View 1 (cartoon, rainbow, N blue to C red):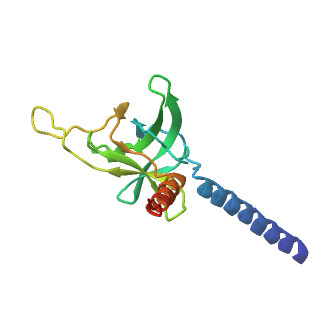
View 2: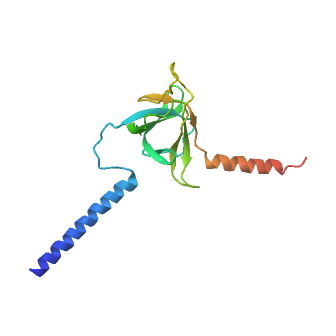
Length: 164
């Protein structure tokens, strides 16, 4: 009788460990177990270079996650990368003139989208115009590509060493 209760407790402990590992794996991957409610709105941003930005990368305003990248594709008309973002509806007061920048967490960390709010555009009553579902913005700062920076740096060193 005693060994059966020990086996039951070991099995219960093992099941709890598996559930915890699954939750941790989903958290690391940026996925959730919640139902797919439509508590967000979509904004499309056009960039000249998205670097290594990925789907499910966070969208942050002042360091706070307000959404995530939902889709990345090429606009075939302009041959320009477009990033679709799902932004939580509780952050519906982002100005139309806000700038979306591709930033890096740390020196060589993962890339994410940073939002710099701006409320320059006003309607006829003097109220700011906000982004809404389906808005398209070109107010973007592209990713800084480390290889391009190194190339420019090495070129400037090489051109500075020439003597005529």
